Length: 294
Image 1: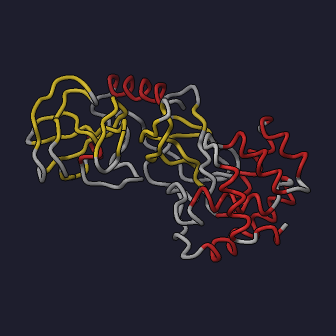
Image 2: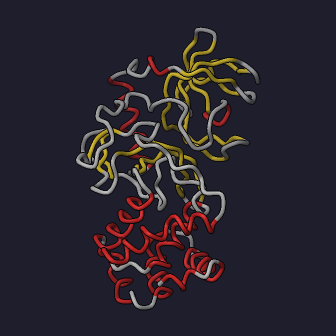
């Protein structure tokens, strides 16, 4: 979902149900001098809030870009209560995770169904509906754990093993960051026609809303993305293979399944906007001798 569309959806839901997330209030502390605003990223400055001030986060929402030392450019704002008054403070000026949302998005319904392989659509929560796999301590440990799934992915979708390993290493820092959802390829859930509801296909079992950076006019801006959640590492790898096979933009890559390096170059043309993406992938193939697994 585009930043603009998600902002419109969230704003509309908040207007329709302004108190929907009040039960999710979370305590926080202001970490820098902050403008306490009447709207997320705009409106009147209601007051100046000092460092160390206690606040209660009611919900979060996308708004105008604010730049903070912690987050850089960000569209994420928190609806807070400070001293009995309600208003908005830039999320980067409040204590909290740099990955997870502090509170639900304003007006977005919470998930109503548990994680299940038989369900492929629903609402995303701010906590993954799965038990998270601990970060891998070394690249070698991650490669060892990912290898069975990469081989199954090759047998099922004809994706070279080295390609799957290289992309998962690059996307997750060798298994250290997996979108808070055992998601090793940054696979996103797709928005449906119902605001706040997403589709995640058969290999995933749900989705999670988390902070992510998207390019806006050449600048990476922190925003909110819906990421697919998986029960296992193998399921994440298989979903990656299924997506490559199903999306026609990757069809040229499958002409080179017997040439994994050329396969990676073809995938890289369309997988990321980073012009150095292919170079980074191929350097990982060399660094960890991933060719040996093909």
